[in-house]
Image 1 (cartoon, helix red, strand yellow):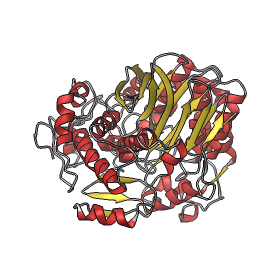
Image 2 (tube, helix red, strand yellow):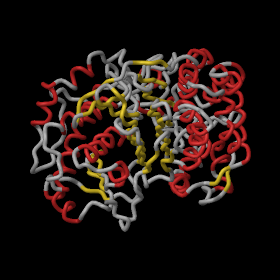
Image 3 (cartoon, one colour):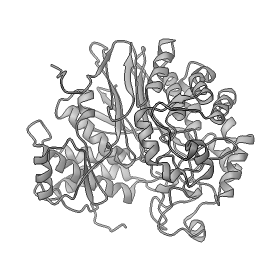
Image 4 (cartoon, helix red, strand yellow):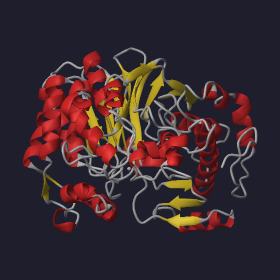
Length: 529
C-alpha cells in the first residue's frame, strides 16, 4: 500500500494515453494534443517545442536530439539527430586556433551543426499526423506572450547566471536587469517565436538554409567558428534512422540508441551489475558501492572507446561480450573502491527528456539537449538561436576514436531508453543530467526490476554518482551508509542540488493500463486520460 505520509507522490495511472515531461507546460500541451487526436509523435514534438521556450537553459532548437520510437506492436527503431562538426574542423585546425587539451564550453568550436530541427522534421514526416503549425501553437504563444518561470528552472537559471553574463547577447535576453528571473516572473523570446513559425511553414529548410542559416553562420564566424553555410545546408537531412542496441536485464530487453550516444555505457553497467545479486537483500552501502564501481568501469570505457561509429567499428559487440563483462565484473572488490581500468589495459588519458504513449499503443522515448546549462551561452542576436556546446565532448588527441574531424559526430551523453518484453515495448524511460545519464539508467532500472519499486518510487530514491574521483551522493543516503562507503575508500561529496531527473511510462501488456512517473527533482509531471 502506498505510504501517503512519505511526502512522495504516487505514480500516475491512465487507461488510454499518457505523457511525462520535466515541465508542467510541456506535459499540458502534450496531453492537449493527445486529447485532440494527435499521436505519440505529435505530442512529443509539441511538448519539446514548448520546453525549448520555457526551459531555455536545458534545451533549444540550437541543440541535438535522439529518440526511440516503437509503433504499436512493432519493433523499436532509433533516430539519431546529433549534429556534425564543420567541414573545416580538425584537431590541427583547433590547435592552430590556440586550443590545447579540450574544447571549452563557450568556444565557438563547441558548436556542431544543430541536429534537433532535422530530427523533429524527420520524425514528423515519417510518423506525425497533425501539421507543425498546430503542434507549435502553444510554444509560439509562450515565446511571443511570455511564460512563468518555474521553481527548478529558476534555480538552474540563477546557478548559470555568471556564465551567461559573459556573452552580451545571451545576457541581454536571459539576464534582464543583470540578474536571473525569479520564480513566477514572466519571460518571453519573440525571435524564437519567429523561428518556430518559419519551421512550421517551411520545415527544416527554414533553419538550415536561407537567411536564418546565413545569419547563424555569420555570427559563429564572428566568434572564430569554422562553420559555413554549406555545413548548415548539409545538416538539413543529417537526422537518420538507425538500428538500436540492447541487452537483457531482469527478464527484459533494455533498448538504447547506438553510438555515438552513451547508451552503450548504460548497457555495459547493467551487464556488469547482472553478475551480482542486486535484490532486496543487498544493503544500501553495498548497492551504492556496486553501482559506483560498475559506473567507473563503464564510463572509463565510454571515454576511451565510444565515438562516431564510423571511427569505432565493432565497439558494441566487444564491450557487451561475455569475455569483457566477466573480466570487468571480476575487478570489483566489495571491500574497497578501486580505480577503473580498460578490459585490455591500454592507457588513455544539463537536457530534457519526455515520453509518450498514445491511445493506439505507439510509444516514444525522446530527448533534446543543448548539453551544458545554456549550452555554449552563445546566442545569435539576429535569429535568437542559442547554440549548444556538444562539440566540447570531442577530444583533441590525434588518433583518439572521439577526436574532432570534418563532418564527425561527437560522443553524446543524451540517451533515451526503452524497456521491451517478448518483442514489445513496455516502457519508454529516460534520465536527464548530462554525464549522469548512463549511470542513471542503470540505477533506475535496478530499483524497478531488482527491488520491485514502482516508477515514482524508483525515481525518488536517493541517488549517487561516481565521477571525477569522487562519489557524489544526495542527502537522502543514510549516515550509516555514508560511513561504510567512506571506510571502503570512496571520497564522498554531499550534493547541494539534485542529481539528474527522469520520466517513464509503463504499459501493462495484459490490461493496457498506463503507469507514469515524473521526477520530483524537476518541475514536471505525468498526466494521462
